[in-house]
Length: 164
Image (cartoon, rainbow, N blue to C red):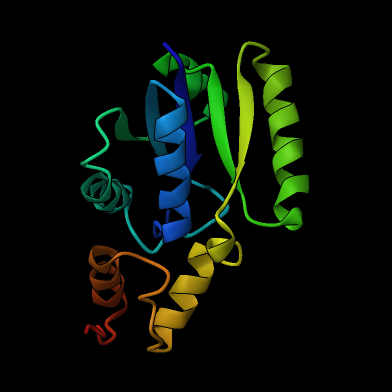
């Protein structure tokens, strides 16, 4: 069985993340979406909120499970029996960081490979940070995140929810 881990902060989950999740679910027998605590970032959403939002969105993908974790990604991957870490690439600027991270992971865990998936072109510019910034100014974030996530963002920020 091919088991993979797609780790990230997902704060919030975007259509770009969902693109990677759906495509990875077709490649691997089992995919774990690992919502992690990133010590460098201050999240808008709690880990529980992020897990819940993603769980709602992937409920139709029978081979995908969302879990939270902290610590080293390779250690968590190993605990799941995953032999692959999935990483999404939006642009060339992502590649240098992701390559360095994957090479470091390979030194720590030679039995775990990293697979890079390029995001669909229509999401190549998209980041969670951009979504939060647009929402904080009352901008329309419908092109970037699912409706359940839009409601949660506006609830957290105390801004108006735009729906049609």
